[in-house]
Amino acid sequence: MKKLLLSCIFVLLLTNAYSQNEKYLNVIITINDEIVVGNIMHMQIAPLVGVQLKNNIDVKYYPGKLILPTIEYQSIPDSGKVLLMFDYYQNSMYNKDVINYKIDLQKSWLASTYLIIKVFDLSSGKYKGIFDPISKDQNYTFAIVSPSYHFELIARRKLKR
Image (tube, one colour):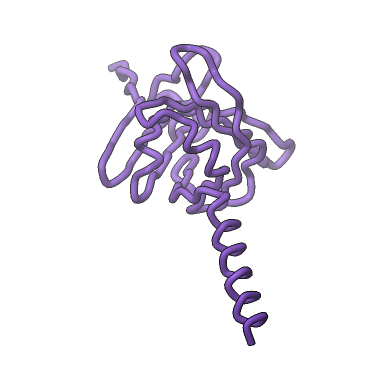
């Protein structure tokens, strides 16, 4: 009986220890107003120290969940900035385009109850010509929505009359 009880306690402690190895964040990513399902690869978070990137942290993304190692998450300063980087595979009728996105975030935003990252691809579609891109190299812009924060890196172009 003692062995059974000790075995059960050991299994519970092992399960608890294993479950704390990953940090689950409630994140939804939309691109051009559609929730991204399965088209994101090579997702990483890179903590920013000044203007320098620290080691990239591999993360997993499922719609509604961003998963990263707890130790790596805790190593990011609470007031720190992070760069969320991922490749988006966009299928078109004739080819498969890969777009590399880099989104500036605050660690405090990731700790929100939920975080919605809205990306607007400006290369084609309904947002082409409406917003200004982040830079000449990055033909997209984004907005962040959470219960505590609302951030938009969106500049509307002046329409010619």
